[in-house]
Length: 162
Image: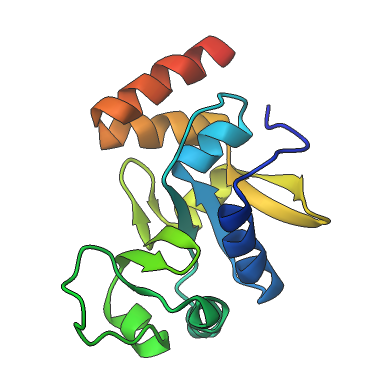
C-alpha cells in the first residue's frame, strides 16, 4: 500500500507540483513509485506515464517550460523545443530540466500506453493534491518487463513489501 505522506526531494516535488497545477493527466511510475510504495531508495529522475490527448500535451509543455526542458544527453546547443507538436511527434522523452531529470513515457514496457497504465493506478494524497501512482501489481509488471538490474532489485524489494 502506498504511503499516505511522502517526503520527496524538493526538485522532484516541484516538478510534480508544476505538472499537477497545470492539470496534466499523469501516473507516477519508476523509482518514485517504488518509494511511494514504501521501499526507500534513491532515484535520479521523475518518471511519468502521460495521456496523449492534445490538451494534455499542451499542459505538459506549459508546465515544464519555466524549467527549460532539454533532451538529456544531447550535445549542448542542440536546438530543441518542447511543445505539443514535439510531444505529438514522439512517444517517450528523456529530459533534463533546471529541477532535474524527467522521463515522459507514452508507453511503458510491460504495461502499454497511458490508458493501460492508469487502470492499475492508485490515488495518493500529495502536497494537498491527489497524485496518481502506479499500483503495486502494475509496478511489479513494469519492473519485470524492464528487466534492468536496478529494476530487478526493486522487484525483489517490492516482493518483500507484499
